[in-house]
Length: 295
Image (tube, rainbow, N blue to C red; front, side, top):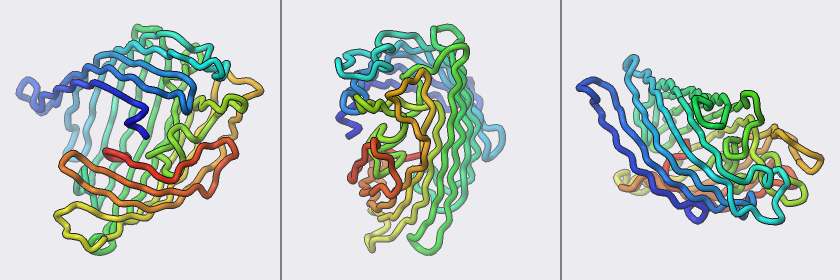
């Protein structure tokens, strides 16, 4: 599903010991096209460059900084789209400074079995450009081993974005669903136009889940395991709004199971999820194929 919606070119370079110090510095050049017609009635293009640097504060605590300049465009807006989407068609320029603190006490970054991690991300847009907001995101995860191959984990994430002197634009809002809330489609949860059924995004979100890794009796070196999970979360607040917007902010929850493979190309996850708590306008899905980590 994700691959069908998105095509991208992303050139990344990292020097792990910049200036012969324990500083990982690098740059990014990216160009992304997204077909969002099925869920939001528009296409989006993003192109830009970024600079980043990170360094250890202590053995487990790491701090990083980044700068991003991007040009984006909401285009090909459908004639049936929400008026709140039609009003944001066009180009804009983003100039953003970001900061992140990460405390990682897990025994592995790819296949953790013990420990925990937590991070806080702060982004300020408006150092140049024509977009102005402050965005804060807090996330964390915890892992326990119950027995050989049996691992229980918990994860959570909360975020808020505040427009600085202006409303938060469509391209910067949070969207929820898909791999972040299995059992719901991408952008399947949150504020939605009642008439066009377009997802509008939100200015706050939270989501999390509990998961139990289950051994399948296969050789450990294959890196294949099963899992049972329950996900939950919500998304809300959209400005400007109108009488056609549904925005309840109510809790959604799912249950399901799946299989994960730590392949040579990165984690590959196949999941089946079913919604237990949902709203009438939410978009659900049962099957999800995901490449890469969910966190």
